[in-house]
Image 1 (cartoon, rainbow, N blue to C red):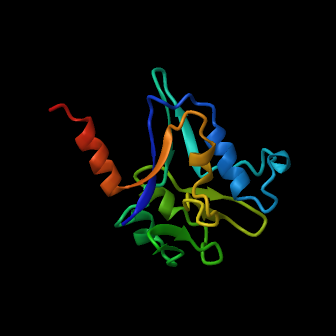
Image 2 (cartoon, rainbow, N blue to C red):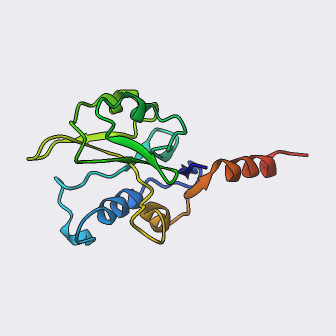
Length: 157
C-alpha cells in the first residue's frame, strides 16, 4: 500500500521548515549551512494563498501518471514509492506535464536536466525529513487506511 505525505492546511504556518529539511536531507553533506540558492530545490513546496498555507508533495500515485508517460522508464515503483532513476532520466519534462499535483521538478545541471520528486526520504530510517522537522506537526506520512480511519473519526454520529 502506498504511503504519502499529507498536509493539514489548518496547522501549516508557512514557515518553509519542511522545504529546508527536504533539501538538507538530500544533500551529500546534510548540512544546512552548505545550502546555496542554486542548490535549494525542495521536493515539497509550501503554497501560500490569501486565506491559507499548505504544502504540496508527490502523492505516490498507485497508477502514477509521471511513470506512465516517461519515454525511458526512468520513473518506477519500488517498495511502495515512486522513484526517479537519475541515470536514465533525459529531462524531457513529460512527467511534469502529467503530474496532477505539480510535484515533479526538472532541474538543469552541467550534466543535463534531471527530474526530481519526493521519495519519502527512503534513505532515512526516521522517515521523511519534512515530517520530522515540521514545528506544528502539519505533515504526516500516511497510507490510505490511515486516511480512511481519520475520515471516519471526524464524521459526526
